[in-house]
Image (cartoon, rainbow, N blue to C red; front, top):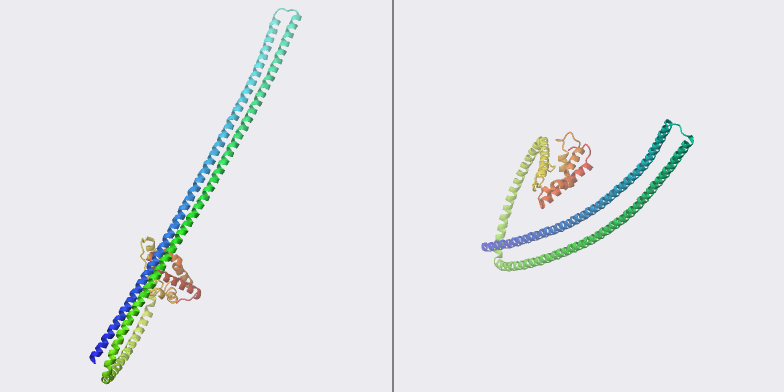
Length: 472
């Protein structure tokens, strides 16, 4: 009988061992599946980041090319404006030179006319002086017959009249010549101005035609660039679509492989279970055959064993009840002592925890500004709790409110001011932009992100539901 019991024990141990092996294999399979899934996620993220990076590079390259072409067009327009300005300056200078030359010629002609008039005046004065001199000489000479003297005077007067008429005609001829010369000069200048204007208009038309041609070429280049950019975008979209199809095909193949692997595992598990059942059935049949022979002795032995077992269980149950009662009393006294101690030390605990909370925030701000690699973990984040949380699920509204709205710190601030100050620190977008990059990627970053969301949600609920004078 003892040998049979030992055989049963061995069979039971073997069966438990096989079950443990099966469980271990299942855990290994699950671990491999999790690794494969994580690798697939990482590969997908890597491809998405690579595609995003390529798109950004293409956009930056196209923007740089557009900026370069715009700068080139601006330079060409500036050169055209500068050439136009120089040409206008040269034309203005030419007109000024022509006007100065015309004014100079007019001044010279006027000076020549003035000079001729002065010469005629000097000549008349000279003749007048000569007449007076001849009269004086005649008066000093002996008297002569008056008739000849009158004739000589008449001759002189006639001569002076003829000379004055000749001078007047010469002056008129000179004026007419000057006027004719001025008219011809004005006609020449007018003709030159017309020719210059025609030349300027022709050059301007040519320049405008060239600029129109340049603009048409620029628009044509822009259309060509837009077409090339559209074609490049189409090629990029086609490449991305091909990559997506390839990724989907790879995922489908991975799913098919996982399905086949799962099917093979199920088949192996079913085969192993069937063999175990067969072995157990054979063992049960042998055991039933042996038990049929010794049924009476075994029943008697079993009854004796059951009685001993019942007595042993009663004794153990009694001891367990006594231990439980002792443990309950001890725990009750210890809980009462801890409650008394906590009530006595509660103000100091909250004040020390608040000071440590502020100090951790200051260190976090300094390290985030100077750190070159991730250093922050879930345990190092200054959570607004009296006791450090074990995970994101431990951050609740009651725990956050008990710490933020405690009456043993920040006595000069109202509850709303405390909650608003905390929201400035724990706003999810602000916290992620400033400090989430300091947390290593993976589960640690996800836990920190969940914790920050729980804190912000708790603070918003407190701000909405708590009264303005509610201090815990």
